[in-house]
Length: 504
Image (cartoon, rainbow, N blue to C red; front, side, top):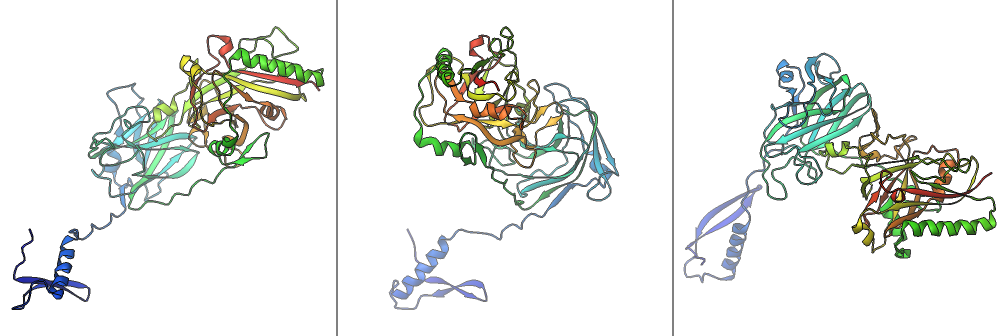
């Protein structure tokens, strides 16, 4: 209940300052005359406003380490974890080389290993007032480096879900000096924050760590001017890439864009077995022979003959395939570094979780006229055989531009000591990109055995202008399946390329 007293506080403003004083009610005046109703309304409105205090001054930029003091270098030491393999111990020293702020920098000399790391606990407890992490790093050869901030509740679990509760920034660097800049509070799991979505309190920041992925014995890295910036630094968005879709005049910004363009004409393909697909292609070959009597059918599947018309008994062994994950956040380092080049089955999904394939088609005579080609990929497991995409979907074969090693390729590198320009090879810029902005083939998935027209792809590989480094198969997220890879036990389940060509 609101109790009205016989005095009323009146607020006035002069020269930008608000003051209030109490004034007695005039005698013999009804309490709720129009004037006092107005005064009461103003008073109640002011009372209902939220109570505020002067805003905290914005944080200023803070240099954590410039290594001008020997004690700053002494604060860093090799990190030894209680679990997992023991890494060779890096050497840490303060030197007068490659300094970017003052006259000294921190030199780290590695002795090999996979994830050798140095760390310091001499950092602020709370990093929330700052928006950007920056530092200068000088490297002598191509490598992957990274910085991690651990909070009290952070974990070192592998994977990409909420368990990766730590801030991390990685970078693939070429030789020379680099300024590393990273958002401290991105909209993702890799963030410094007070708590997770599940309410878990993260606590204080307890360590700053620096690591290099798979360094050589004797590799050196120089670090200087580690600082926290009060403002978010503007990020220049990458230029949009236009992908040419072979066999069409379309230019698209990606597989999702292509899917939207083709959705209206999508019809669910019939379920197909390997035998169905091969029989249908044989029938197609018979029709082609009527117009091209010299046409030849070649079948490229590991463990089978039929790819070389000049050697009918030669067994084919020319497929390569390897899966990787470049799924975020940036802290999913171990998962990104995994190589899955020797597996019998693995998933096929979106650009950040899909396989690379390469098939050797060198047995096709030079100058041959490619008349037809199909790529067969069998879904693995009973579940995948019974299900299929029930909505419009599309898959593409994106041309690779690097000579990748099946036994070593991952999201960071395509071969030992050969690194992608960007994580997962997702860089299509310049004259020598990781992947060409070209979709060699496209089409919907289907139940059982997927069948995609690869006529244009084979022409591309044999035109004498493009090396055959294979392709990454990925989709627009409307379909997902596990596939048999070339290591599948049953030969008929392995990937196959069927080609009809006419010798020159």
